[in-house]
Every structure is written in C-alpha cells, then in structure tokens.
Image (cartoon, rainbow, N blue to C red; front, side, top):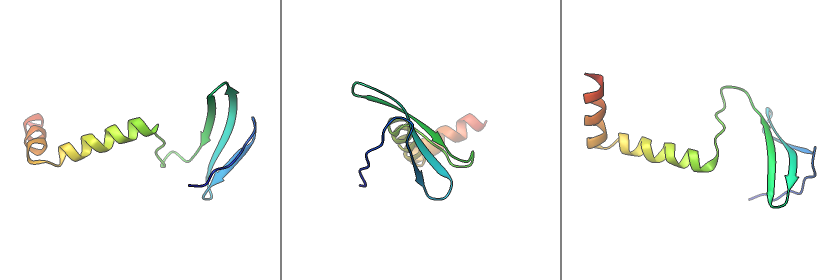
Length: 72
C-alpha cells in the first residue's frame, strides 16, 4: 500500500485519467473528490464488497434458478 500525505486542495493522480482531491478535513473525517471517466466505476469499499457478494450468490445454482424465475 502506498501512503501519501496531502493537504486540503491537493490531489493525486491514478493512472492517466483518475484524479483524487482532498476537499475537506474535519477531525477524523476526510472528504475527497474523485474525477474519473464515466466508464470507470467508483464505489465505497463496503458497497463494492456487497456487489461482489451478490454477484457470487447469483453464480450459485440457487442464484441461477432465482434469476430464471425472475425472467419468467
């Protein structure tokens, strides 16, 4: 893991087209802004993990059967 120190208003760049900017710092909370192309999904980690969990469940036999029932 790369650990960086940034102040309010400072940014970092990921790859060629994702910019993360520190917008505000209040106590132990940091508000960040993420500028990325629309085709790059950006999720909070807890949301991403839930999506992964649901995708794995959908790939099971029971999940597949449930999807078939929805399609009817």
